[in-house]
Image (cartoon, rainbow over all chains, first blue to last red):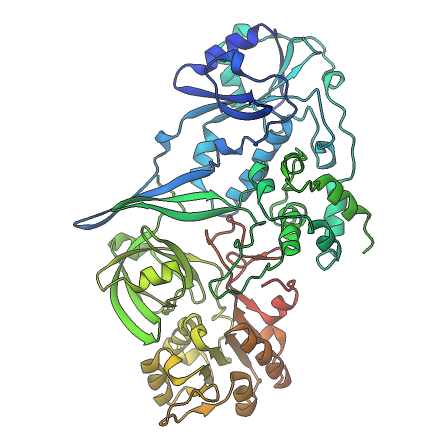
Length: 341
Length: 278
């Protein structure tokens, strides 16, 4: 649908927050403490962080929790009783303040969870999320959304995208989906008519460093390159990059047992871990860190575009900010672009 | 939830067969009759078997789709889940979800001869195809099975080997590694690739299905090439660590190819195009 553009006064945001919070809905928004910003359930408008470039964790947890029950079981005298998780146990979430790169990541994550087999646990959670994106007016040296098909004012993935018009200004609200319209309907008086607004003037300038299509083309013949070894020498296989990534979907399935009761849970995993692909026999198809690093880059920039027609990277730069060994994905992709075949 | 992909069928362990040291076969029946009626699979597919409280483990369905009403799996006690499975008794309830993956194209093999080559614990994934072919025996010309294990006690399906060996419409050759023979052993002695070379089965109108440890596979392929088998007529089934079984958990892929969705059945021609990462 064509987006509907409205103006929201700066002072009206708090009123909107109060409206959204009610009626069995939870608002998740960025919250800063000790220099780190993360998403959490917010009760007070003044708790919402405003001065952040990017949260430390992505917002993927709302539809793909770090640890999530997929079934409960209990052993009883008659045998075994096994129950799935009911959708009505999942709350409605207003995801407030997510950056366009995270909003774009929702589609990329969804493409994995819906590749032929529809993952209804994931889809149910996502169906209850309304995405209230906020454009970026600031950037840092780790951001590269414009190199992977995004931009600081990208509407993709948001139900409403807010763009602040200047440092202390009002907000342009682009209403992009039916879910967005439902938000307007809760409090239409807060959404005034917007005149001609040149949104781009208020967005951060994120320089293009490469094109993801260029990387894709290069990777076709890059599997056996020596470059992977050099790039990953520093990698300690901690998996932090996967945990902060908005599109990393790899998971493990484990049983959490308490006597006769227990749950089967799905929990985040990482292709960077040495045990990730280890066979019981001791054989490991990706037996060195360079093979695991290669998998990370190839999956996002070669396998996903080929198999799912989407890239697995939104240029949020979190992996580089989080890496304890200071690996920088932007530098590594640039050197892949420049490497001789 | 109506459509929980991770919800296993409840299966009752109906019969346990001891096959070899640490190796057992479970015959599993669906607890819910409705599940059983809806369930269908084809040769080559696999599933996730689980012991509640311990976890899930991936193996093929070892019984033939021509045998309705139950499935069988054969596993070696090696890790956490297979140890817990091994502790199960007849009557125990376990979980099973599947079937997943692609299948051996038995329809396309109509009118051809089949050559099965298996090593050790890799006979189970092939047993499904063997029984499927034997139950549709008229569809195929010669059926030859070459099966080897480290020692006579490591041969699995000993009763079925006897059965296949006594059938006039099957040519069975069994072998054990040098030193693995018992005093009364009447089969061949030697590694599988060597025995294949010695038996020298014809490649004319023949499909070869090869399953075994990597080292056996590595040395068997060149022998088959020498016998005139084309890469398109050699089939195998890959195994990789898996969690989901349907392309989401992210660990079984070999390059862009997912063993769970694109496999586990591949021709040698397809394998040759994969990077060396399996």
